[in-house]
Image 1 (cartoon, rainbow, N blue to C red):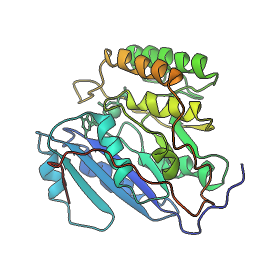
Image 2: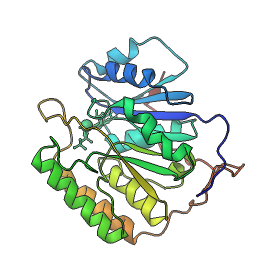
Image 3: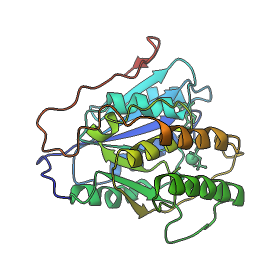
Length: 267
Ligand SMILES: Nc1nc2c(ncn2[C@@H]2O[C@H](COP(=O)(O)OP(=O)(O)OP(=O)(O)O)[C@@H](O)[C@H]2O)c(=O)[nH]1
Ligand SMILES: [Mg+2]
């Protein structure tokens, strides 16, 4: 793929967060410290946290590179990510969970294939080249089974469709007509990309899994909603806005706003 990229690209890093008081501020500091080779903005979408996360975010000094969105209720990680995509002003968007399971210092290696023009989409795989690692068996087998189902239905060979590290051109993200609100959004993004013919490059990343006791909100029953998203997307019509294959286009496709609640606030 050859693509002419704008001289000055910008990265938008979307951080969905609910009740992550211990990790969210260190995470933001780590993200800020990373030299991505381009300007970046950080968009934190807080899902009505009740553990002091909101107060910790509001105590941060105001800064041009930090946008805080406060939802009036916990509407799910997927909804928060879609809100972030909609607010993003960068050329590249990516998701970074707030829990330090994945390491922000690896962001540059995720960006590299896109900056080099090799692909529009990169996933950070927790399993490629390293197998199960320290991942608990239930999470590993669940992810393996769901990734396998997507591989069969979309004839591909991915190793981790549920990774939070999804990095893509902003125009591609906006072209996907995403609908899911929960953890199933990870599958929906993957499957819509595959269905629309985008090449997904996987880059291995370091994974430090946490337990439910340490705050993990994903539970095994999420598997059913993920499987539904995989199957539903396979038989749904293609995205109506799969127009942007390259940043050489001078006219950006119209952005469809997430129907965010009027009760959401932004700082
Ligand atoms: N805004 C918002 N964020 C959420 C919500 N639920 C979870 N999150 C955030 O989404 C991120 C991922 O949640 P986790 O519980 O760590 O789940 P996970 O890491 O995807 O699970 P694994 O893939 O198994 O590692 C974390 O930063 C959470 O705080 C929600 O309802 N609203
Ligand atoms: Mg996590």
